[in-house]
Length: 483
Image (tube, rainbow, N blue to C red; front, side, top):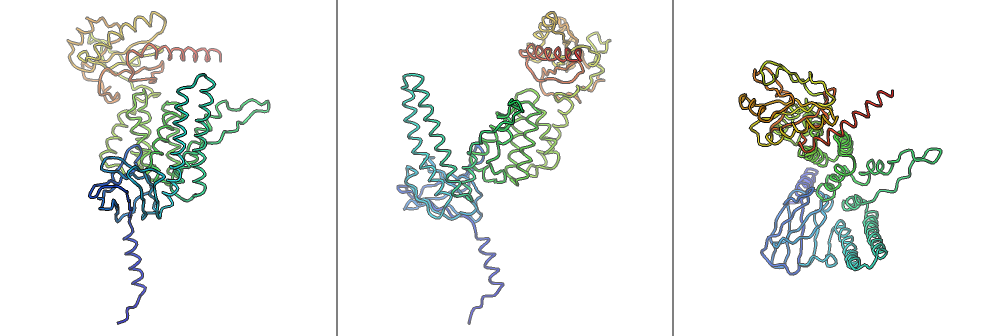
């Protein structure tokens, strides 16, 4: 019977082959022992992810294979002794062979059927030779006899660095479509900017280098290439950009974070988008720098609570959105929520927060049985006396947060706290709905208009902070008077 190839047969064969496509990476290690387990892992930001494992045969051959293609990235083949070597995997190359020995000497690698790894090893061989030169210069530097010798050797370091940079770019230019070339291009240095000048030759922007560097930081990085997340490159670039490229103040961070995320979104980097949103949110949530919850609030409101984080489960989104609502009333630079229906220790005099008339008001929530509060409140009392006498005018609005009224009054008498002390002895104040805090003491510094200038600072920092704020206040007052 003659077999006929029909259109249906061709379609079925095509579908079968398409689904059969996966990966097969063969590693031959001369000198490897048989029946030992090797691991295949990939970088993920600053960590590693286990992807596969395989057992060596009697010839030292290890085959990693799977039915689903591996995503772009730098992968590691890890030996039983936890030694490893790196290789490049791209969607275009899923079936290749690497031969080496147990020393993983770059010059001993033999690459078959992988342009990515041929280019990668070519660079590693060049960089390895330059590292030998580097160590030689480093040794000579330790024996340098004078400053001029040291400067000459430092210049040699710079030459080596330039040579390595040039080698990366030459390989990338020669192989423009390879994934490894995208990695190499991320190391490309930005050109020296040409400053704009006024007719008299003066600079239009004295910060032109800083602004150019910040605005063009991502020029050589393909933000649509999710594979960069599976290299050490993107995480390192992101961390430097977000923490060292511009002023670490909330408004600047929010502005630059938003610009970057929009660039990634426009480029189509889905995994990069997810990682960047998560990293910025988590980093500034954990930050100990004052007022950084403003960044968390922005990220939560703009992304998590706006339905732009499909990877996050409902529990995580709910938790973030609930937290955003809690911290919103007391973000820095907003007007502090009024506090009413609190009374002083006579139980008769109601003292509302907005009745305090002062250039600055320190609002502190505390408990006389809290160990940290027992150290803070008397020190605050001393500062209240000394700074006001020195001409730095401020008031303290001290809110007792518990209900041991006799103990509270006794503590006030013993420590002779001179500033305004109030409590919610009649249960009529709802300040806890507006002021979110978990531990005490919690401190806020308000300006004359009751805007929150700073919060969550230690008592040791208070004098310096008030001094700086008072200097700004005096300068603003002079400007107003002048105008």
